[in-house]
Image (cartoon, rainbow, N blue to C red; front, side, top):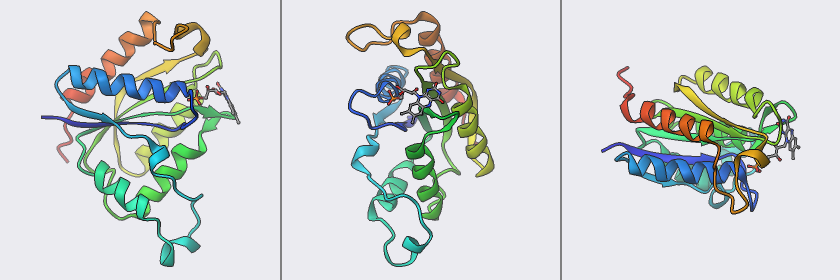
Length: 182
Ligand SMILES: Cc1cc2nc3c(=O)[nH]c(=O)nc-3n(C[C@H](O)[C@H](O)[C@H](O)COP(=O)(O)O)c2cc1C
């Protein structure tokens, strides 16, 4: 059985990226995966600083790394801030690389972004893909871009845009069949 986790690079109370990540956990489970949304708010990490590594390495980074390294698939939804990757997304990745748990070696990654901008967070998404590629992670080509968010979610916060829902399904399909062989 495919083991999958979904993450959001925003822990804002009404975060759209968290909604997308929760939806993707549900869709992955419907496709047959053992899937769960991991709330990064439960893994609060300090802003990365090499000085902290020696004596103050956060237990939460090891805990999160221990969980994610077991995954076959990880879906990461991230906001775009000021035309780039959101700080929580990058900080999480930076700490995880320093756990030395090889968190990025096994899972296949799917990416998504919810943004209030017309370009649907495409710049932040491409930064995330570039970072993951740089550290040797495998990403599937399909991605979810949602924006402007007000048009794509209904008043109850459900994703209703048909194109976005189809993109979610394409990412799920690719995550379910792509196994890293190297
Ligand atoms: C500091 C900051 C910078 C932002 N920069 C961008 C941006 O460059 N492009 C964009 O599309 N949206 C930008 N936004 C708007 C976010 O897309 C929007 O707040 C989104 O809802 C954040 O995701 P969340 O709902 O998951 O928290 C920015 C928001 C903040 C707070």
